[in-house]
Length: 145
Image (cartoon, rainbow, N blue to C red):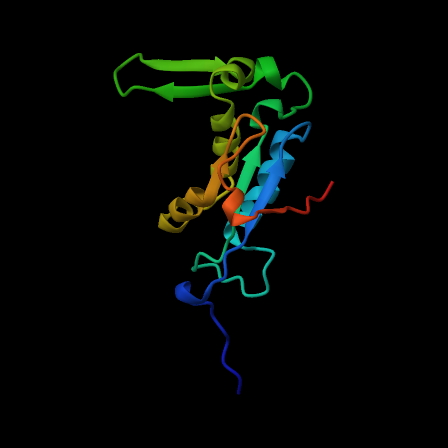
């Protein structure tokens, strides 16, 4: 009888991928980034081991959304004090912190545990077209369109 093979944390080979977010839809892009961070596309994927790859996203400020989300979608934050709930529409959030919009979308698609906290650290997001990861020679990520 053959035993089920499991990936071990030390044996995982990590690749680097580059994604240009210009003109891409926010949710569809976030789903594919989350799958890459988890390693779902690899044959050695193991749910309880971080088998994912690094993802570098450029041009996060030029991400697209459909419908009236720019004005209707709200981002909430709370300081912890009573009555201190603040909200900001997507349009303002993209102006102020364009990288956080994509980071929150991807983070919401990862499981809520220690493993996801390790996986989200492999996501590098930059608002403009430049990034400091040329030394890792990131390959273009094949996106389903």
